[in-house]
Length: 88
Image 1 (tube, one colour):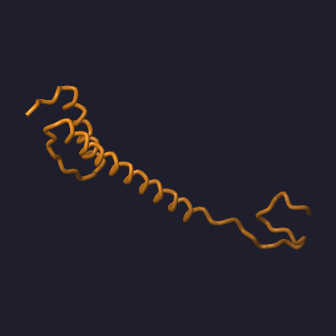
Image 2: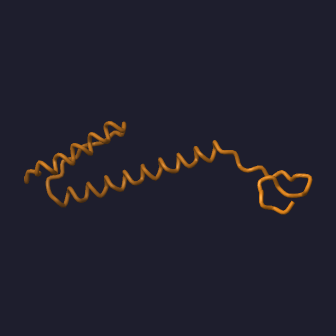
Image 3: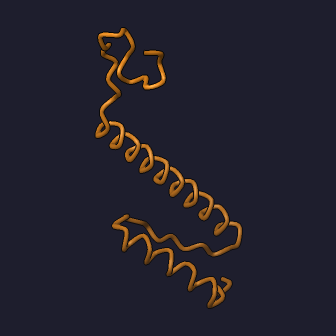
């Protein structure tokens, strides 16, 4: 078994700490070889990107549900209220 460098271990611990502070559960899996580490890192990256995309979609959905759609009722001149540039 090859020992990881102190810099690599520090990066791993910082990542685990970030997940813990964010309230995200994680499973520490030892990576003995560089190939295992690369594979597990790729899985981790895919999962984090998926979580970020999901969070972004939830935020967009929340914004859409808070902001009402523009009114499309017509005024007495026949133009819609949502179109400020329509001829009067």
